[in-house]
Image 1 (tube, rainbow, N blue to C red):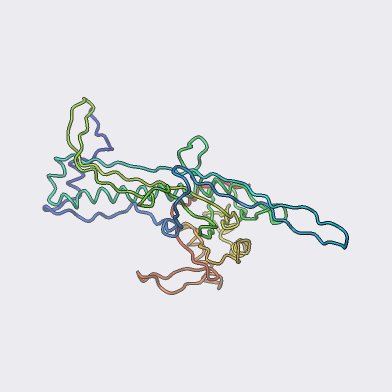
Image 2 (cartoon, helix red, strand yellow; image 1 turned 180 degrees about the vertical axis):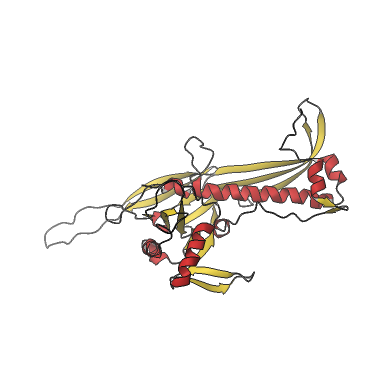
Length: 326
């Protein structure tokens, strides 16, 4: 029995998106909320395929001097870090005949393009958290890949990975990020006039079926060229090993207070990111305490959540199936 290539848009899909000649609004049940994408600072890289940044490791301290005695020679120390720019791309192709059958061909193509935008947004949000260049150098290293071991205030130069003491494989994390050109930011190729984000309508192009026969399709090309740069590791705080179920080892406001205090300026201008599971835990905590507060409504009438004045945002890309960080 012949099978339909799931990568191709079909007449059935056109029928499901139409009614009496009109293109229907699609209930986007697969959409996700990943507000980290709207917060991230995005700046041009100093290269085409990578970004080089320098991080200071050691400061000279000076020395107390006596008369007729010299001063110890010192210098600061730095390290150079190279961050690669990943290229996330997708191509949409729709048979010309199928587009011509639609009552509103432009709207019909837009319904497909919107799906690509949402799908790639979800892929990018996942990469910012879990991306890993080990074995896949074309990707980027996400936050969970960079901060994958517990730290200690007494032994770690930067104490930014804290444990809620959960165990097993049903765990999740809460992240706190301070965005800025000297803190944490995204980069795009320096020559890109569009900030590394491109939606190109290629119009009609000729493609070939499996038998080598040509036909015409409308083609859209989507590109997101992006890299993640962590200039100051203090500006990323992770609370990991949060149980996604049960009543113990869940969201702990004391851990979050400690994490914020490890950040420059006590977490000023930081943003807290959590998935809906942890947000629900914070909601429940807010019912009995005053650490978690609701502020003024956003433009859509929804209450905004903050923790001691730090905004809390939803990121569905954060999983509930993380393994324990040790």
